[in-house]
Image 1 (cartoon, rainbow, N blue to C red):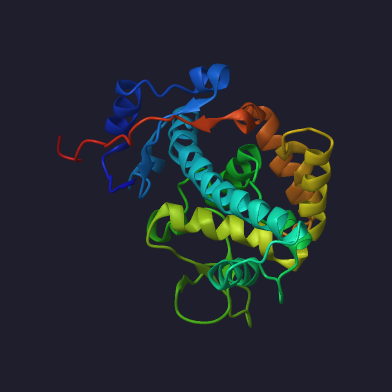
Image 2 (image 1 turned 30 degrees about the vertical axis):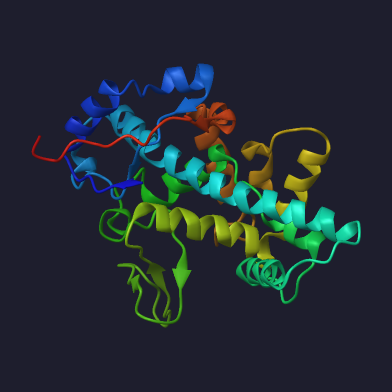
Length: 269
């Protein structure tokens, strides 16, 4: 379902237009084409107009976020169904129990706890993910984004699967985790927010929004990500400003089209 597409950004811009992928239309009706790019255009940073660069970035990242959320919701619906059966006294099969235990481990739980698991297996508001990706990757132009498909600045301290920052402080050993494709980085980011103990306040705030009948809203939930950056509150101010200035809140209602996957033309087309 992922398009291996490394065409120049101007060709990519034309392709998006060709399939009717316009952000003003997404803001109106919420439908996003199922077009998933494996990488950013290599020369994205050469686009002179920042506005054009931002549009290509959003059009590239938004479907990936929605696809990640779609997969999360698939697991969530299964978990809810199994929980409901368990609560009425039905005996779960060995396979179902193992599946639940695997999801609990994936989301950072030491043992199966339905309440905690349901709180963790839920969507990340697209506005929040877009803003963090934009800030962490320089709107897709950073070395980490271009060479490692890393758009969320996630660090790793073990193994060699990462890129050494050029300005890493003396004595630091972390790397910026790299990925084979953009979707891998997006999925890693969602697991981080949904599974790491540092973001329990974020998950509880999201759950509270849903219990009050609201769709998770990134602008409010950003305030519960104080631990994401060493910049602390200043980072959260920046993230909320990116959301506000670029009207990203409109994308919290976006959804992928229920149509066939779109295939991009080859770079030489």
